[in-house]
Image (tube, rainbow, N blue to C red; front, side, top):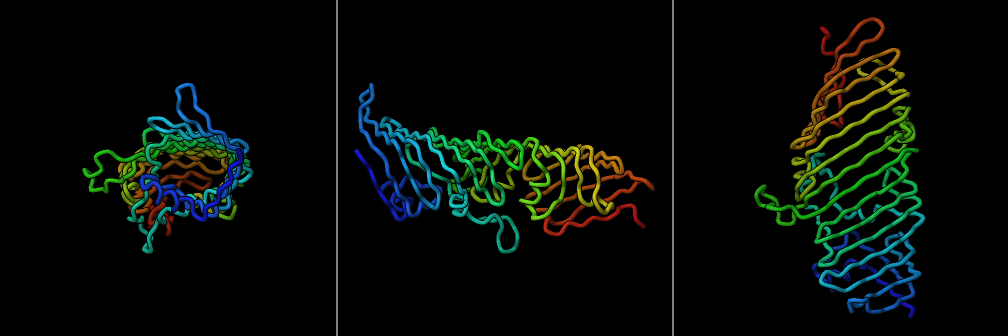
Length: 333
């Protein structure tokens, strides 16, 4: 038959009906319209199939199919498509990452809970809006098994490059050992960007052109915590970034545009501190190499480098709070 439903705030409605479920967004002004069929599968378990589904909430809209299968652990599976998917309704519900003093927030980060239900959602979005960036041709998956949620950007296009990412969210085991709440998160994430246009990316991120050329990078993180601050303090992982065949603004004591044949750096992260190694810039006018640390816990950078250019070599430091970095020559009188 035909199924139609509306809810002013779907998350609130579900929280009252099933206290074990906490959706990651309000799902305000929700509406659903579809053709519905209830049947029993070969195991005799009831299955609800929704065909020609149209679902709207929080300014987003999806079309496709959805099925609900009863069992020891019920399963919700869906294949959905949308022209535009805004992530703001999901991220706006999270605490601001920084407090009024520009320190990492210690507000508790809520863990999404979906009760004793497994998920297998496949979503395609022509445009995925993740401020300030837009990922085109996005293919996503949201999978939950035994309370752990996996969110994957299987493929997407960002500034002409290819973006893939995965985030796994679970409950931290033995959270009390670190003085955390029992609802602390265990986060594992990876991301890889390949062959993006550095100019387009910098315009989106900073509102001006910081660099040109081809940009690639990768990131892997793992941490446990119940707030942004405690997660940052626990983060471990690695990162790598490279830029080829382009230009960048202001390198150390060199002012103006610098032609870059290649620029690369890698970092290892432990307990919230990134150790930067293999920082190497190679260009026709300037070469530079350096190392340092990025203390994510205190949001402080301490980078030392040596650059060679026409007229001699110079050693310089980039240091201070991330909001007020200072560049200075370290061999100046």
